[in-house]
Image (cartoon, each protein chain N blue to C red):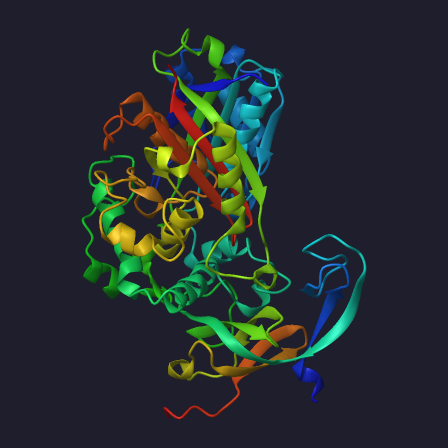
Length: 385
Length: 115
């Protein structure tokens, strides 16, 4: 399998957007294609991540709709879904298509349109990621699942609840510099604790905002990447794992095995350890998620993630800057788009072109987690020499 | 024992996992050698949350509490709290899980002393 690189990235703004779901995706794709400097006819496969297009907009057949909107040729176009990991899954399939030699240029994207829909309907759409035979029947919502993890986590590790809420403060601070983000307002611990309870102990500001958005990337063999972009970013590892779908499958609410397994395999493939990662975009759909993810990815010991973050380890100047973009919690979480929005930020970091630039960032990691720890992708990227 | 308090599972003879229904194979190891076992609903509260933002068509209380109950120490069961004394819910509290026509609910095993 040959080495592959990302030569183009693009994104829409995130938030309440005017255009429809197809147009938002077309915009992000066109930006990525322009960034790559390739002709559309070079693209020989397209993967699109999307979670709830039919449920929230009534628009199905999205990969074909977006591809036709772009004017792509007679090529395979495929929509992939793995709840919140849909974007990461689309990316991995594009990587595989190029790595195996099936195609030379793959376009990957993710999109979601969620605003302008009544809250109960969005809540139900997101709750679709829990097992409808069991959790769904008793009204467990998606924030409800993470709230269960939050309460168990602080109990088992004797961690003050405030330390969990506090990770949001860091991310919202990062967002002040990032025009892509939906929420760009300095946020204090007091603000978070005073916000509306969603699923206790999660308050509204512990939760990523409902948002529209899309992100896209163009992938080609590493060998020819410099013909197209001065600073290509190479894929060192791309992994995807199955986790659990029912709470009754779990032995623990403190760790997501899908992440642990995807990360372990990715570090092995890349020939590195967590200490070698200079910057990471990880799946902070909720405050507690960032804490658990940071431990599952090997950045901190289990139970120590919140204290480490409170001590500054995950800030821009810290030992492992996490979510320099502002994260899902500030950017928003248009579900299908997130995996590629994370990669957009890592690519910018490794090009030296990010708004919150981590000095000398050479190796980055993107972590995308779907459902109650059900699907996961981990991507390790490096500045191409 | 009241039938309401029976949690019907599929026990895997290969790996020892208890699978909640529906299950055609073991969810842990994939083996088809699974047999029906009924567990009593006695357990302890592993975690809970009070939900203020319900899904569509929610007709029960608002807010409401959902718990994750460790039943018999063997399996975690997600259940809806039948009561409204949220202050009485605490991790480790003894609870009883009921099966109300395929929907799991729970009550505290002991009367709450706070009220």
